Length: 119
Image 1 (cartoon, rainbow, N blue to C red):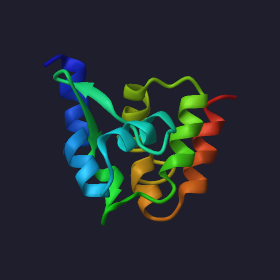
Image 2 (cartoon, one colour):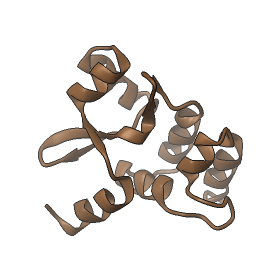
Image 3 (tube, helix red, strand yellow):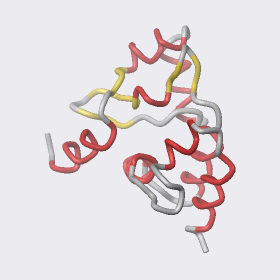
């Protein structure tokens, strides 16, 4: 495991394998891959296997407001690892992490901050 992987692990905490994410959402693994391609979810390869942050899936659904933020970050040129780091790193202006703000139904505020990084 590289230092980058350890840093992401410290930020993200719990990960789901592709199979676990598919089971949690009640869909096929191919559908989860498509969700990642469509920026509905974000996954990175860890230890040779695709992994998705468990925090992105709640009660059998994808966290509301996540897709818009992931799309803005991807359009801004963020790699999946950079997007994860941004989503899970505390921002004093929110307060908390962007993910905390999305969980608190403040996705629009998070997307504004993500868009502002482009300027």
